[in-house]
Amino acid sequence: MEMRLSLVLLVTLLPLGAADPPAAKAAPAKEAAPAKAAAPAAVTIPAGAVETEPGTFRFTDAQGKKWVYRKTPFGVARFEDKDDAAAAAPAPKEVKPEQKVLAVERGDMVHFERPGPFGIYKWDRKKSELSDMERKWLEEQQPNSAPAASTAEKKK
Image (tube, rainbow, N blue to C red; front, top):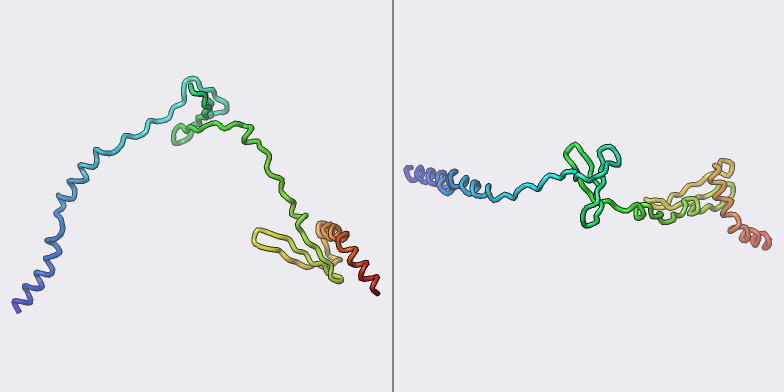
């Protein structure tokens, strides 16, 4: 019985003895504190900067770089000024969605297909219920399908 008691005490106290004392853990942290880097200098608006809008200043430095300084709630922000010519470059010409629509007549119904961001959109509409845009799409497809209809009539 005494042997079991001493074994239980040994097993429960063994992990406590393996742990480092709290004073030893705190000492390395105190040594690492002075090794921190100094904070970067705060950005300020230069004396020769010209205010273009309220809170926005433009400045050209000695190297010829153009900078924009802007007052924010968190301090002054500085970023490089980009040329207006690069920003005003024309966007690539985009194909209109109505040019991509396929319209096929099927009796008194018209079947439409249009590519979209999530796949091909398909829908059917009665000829009597077509919207103006759907009617336009169908008329654009008519010249392409008219010769096929005339060949079918010739066979009769």
